[in-house]
Length: 249
Length: 291
Image 1 (cartoon, one colour):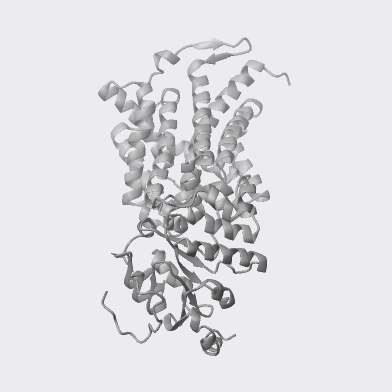
Image 2 (cartoon, each protein chain N blue to C red):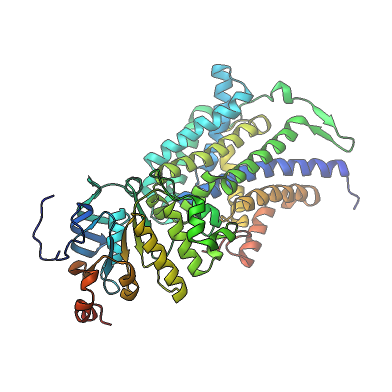
């Protein structure tokens, strides 16, 4: 792969493998508003990479652009050797990318089982229902409940669980801990760690970098629709002051 | 006043038959509205096309009623899917008004073309031999074809309900009605699902058209007359629920039938009076979700 020497891609590689997802000069628009102004980053197989940044920086838009569910996008998005920057979202999903949206997207007119079974299998080797119930025992008890009758934590678990069935090995999780109780956040943290151990590649969007620090290999900082910094987890402490400035916390 | 049971039951049966058509048509409208967000004003014209399709199959190809029950929904459904691909798909994301105007225009064109070639009077379509005659139930005389229409419509309505509410395919459809973007991002081909859904709704209308052909004759404006009442039924029932449109369809048919017996002068307006009352009390319809 040709190395481009853009200044806004300073993150050191966590491993030397080729990028599973590689994004170059990604620009995206919501209607008239220009949200992403040339994002450059990459995610390698087996990594957990976290996008940090303030509200409105463009983190969610980045995930949606990769998934192909944004109004207009330009630039190169390469996944697993294929250019997906012009593909429709159903084709992108079939390449093995699964998306868990910030609002969780649990369907009110479907019960828990139907929600769980909704995403079709795109690859062999997805988790079986038994394996999913082992990760999220609560769901087994609630299979007949209406999807939106679950608690916020259970809905988040359902939203993650249903994309594990599909066989996709690249997961994009948008703020999976938002608005949840600490004990649930911990459970989601364990789940992500376990998925990582099993070889899943994860692109995470988080506001809560204390949570991210427990699972991430690398970080990118997003501001005004661009990557402005990046570092590995080992360098988190050294970058704390900078990070506080970036995030305004 | 003394009640003439024979006449009352006869009107009830007429009500049930009309109710069957209301249910089949409002069911299709509800499915289409849920998925395409389009108020399908062409529904009456497509219902009429179903009846004409049966007429052509018989008179041009000698294909009878039973095959027409299968073929007409498929042929008219395919026409509907073509219409969705060429016209309706471009309206996604726009205000309801555009879909309403476009489908209304399409209905006028279709009806105009049929009127041009076939005039306004009805063409006859015979009841199939197997369903001719009647049964004396002791308390009333039941023409077999009418009983068949009610029973068959009910079965089709319940099958459609089962398909949508109880199967995997139906779950995809319900989910895509709620959030098509996310469903597509899971790898489901939503545009194809939308086309098939429109085809399903149109197919139900065409099926109602075939069922109605032996009862009401085949006329270019048969749908235009019916669809206004069906829209009132849909407003009363609300667009939200499949079972709601089925129950409302049959119930309003029966209420209309009863009105024909007790106060015939109001039989043409009772549905609209009920619509006004329901709108006053519950603007989203009896089973509708407030939006």
